[in-house]
Image (cartoon, rainbow, N blue to C red):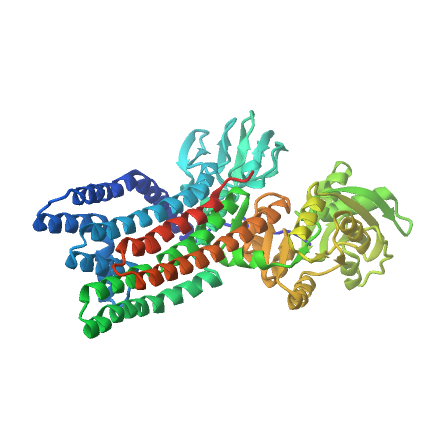
Amino acid sequence: MYDQHEHSACACGCCEMEAKSVREKREYTKKQEKISWQTYLPLAFAAICLGILFIPGLPVAANYAITIAAVLAAGGESMLGALRALAKGKLSEGLLMLVAAIACVALREWREGAAIAIFFAVGEAFEGFAQQRSRKSISALASIRPETAAVRNADGTITETPVENVPVGTILVLRPFERVPLDGVIENGKTTMETAALTGEAIPREVGDGEEVLSGFLNGNAAVTIRTTKTAPNSAAQRMLQLVEDASRSKGESERFLQRFARYYLPIAMLIGALVAIVPSLITGDWRLWITRGLLVLVSSCPCAIVLSVPLSFFSAIGGAAKRNVLVKGSHAVELLCRAEIAVFDKTGTITTGDFSVKKLLPSGGFSEADLLQYASAAELHSDHPLARAIAQHGVAQLDKSAVSGSQEYPGGGTSAVFQSKRILCGSARFLREQGIDVTPNPTAQVYVAADGIFVGAIALESELHPDAAKTIESMRRAGFRRFVMLTGDMREPALQVAKQCGIGEVYAQLLPEEKSEHVKRLKADGTVVYVGDGINDAPALAMADIGAAMGFGAQSANEAADIVLVERSIAPLQAAHTLFCKAMRIVRFNVGFAVLAKIAVIVVGFFTAQPPIWMAVFADVGVMVLTVLNASRLLAKKG
């Protein structure tokens, strides 16, 4: 029932190492951006050499020298890498280029030899450009994370300090229109914060003393002081960036298959090319023709288009999702979300806004409404759960806080506290019954209260439906989701009302975290399940689902258990991600089919041509690779 936030500092030094890693990554990225243009100079030189080779009447020695210069300039680095890999017993695409270039020089196909190296380099450049676009869409998020913080020292002076060096509990001064550098709570002051960078909410939020603010929030026109509760590596902005940076390390089924495919495909392709070049030549004696055809098979069958474009499609999908406020932990999530047929939602904070208000006080046993509210506010005073906050805020004005002690939380159940020498229990009806209290149930109430073992009454609360919840669920239904389920710890009647409003057909209410997980496990037998939730109680279900989607930066355990994080406090980005990922999978299938058909067509034409042109093989390799890479890059297009 209750979200728990960890505010402890790291004493083992791992945070310092993580901070160093953050700095090194940032410096390395900046260095890459500065030197990237230099990689095009050798390619430009090779292109000039290719132009010179078109001059008629050049001596043979000049052709040799110019062709070799072009090959080394354009493909020297790739060929050296291929030779190093070969020394370790591994084959790479660069080795195919090296063999093809040597064969072209031996056959005195000067222009073709230079063209193979140049177009191979052009293909790598296109791949690098596409990856850079994807990285930029992700690294653009880094602008929400300030690099320094204004630390207030014990003597009152202010020092600009790198965020990596600021420990938990430090007092920061946040000036007007600055971004919050680290997660924390307002120590002193009142202001408005624009939270769009992390939550997607465009309307500024008012915050004051004791309220939590996250790194990346933009301050309004009032200065405030903040006490930090997280170090830099654990703050919201850095966690958001880290989720996306780690995504490319987790591979989906398609990428893992391609790795295995390339491992066996390359040696087979080289063996077939060699057999085509040698065996018929020994029989017919026409070495030039069959070596050319062997080259055609060798170069055409290079799997660059598939091996590069498929991972790039997933990488681009992850980058495109980041633009849509969806953070993806790995390419496996792209495939699974596209296949998902069953959508399962938590209610509070997922389908509803999570902001509750007290609707009705239902006292019992001679207690008054004032007694009920006072006891409940005392028990819920120190809880972070949305229901608890709503009750505490409703009754805090009439509450003597100094009379509250011994506050305790029971995740999935409720809270307890000592107030006016009485032990107060507050939580679900099931929680109170487990404590031996005779509870009178009410179908509209979510929270029940007892004092010294005597039932005091119940409280009904209400939360607004997310404005886009019904529309998003209808869009998901049209997109192919065939089953919608709500799993909630709330009472059945309020849950049914919310489900009816947004078009969810199945409702399971009054569930504990482990019961949510069991329901998800059963649903998985009927199809691929995506579960959406935001609280610590949702973590088991998020981990159990085929694909878990955590709402915003709520409970850290929920974010860790999920496969994707919806930065906005809305389920709308889930539908946007589903549409994008299905488009990514269509592009993957098209690219693979197009590449295979193009290669087969070129090889067939080459075998039925008296003098097969090698440029056809270059197109089947590099040309197809460029086209598939460009096709994959469409996933980075901005949302409309």
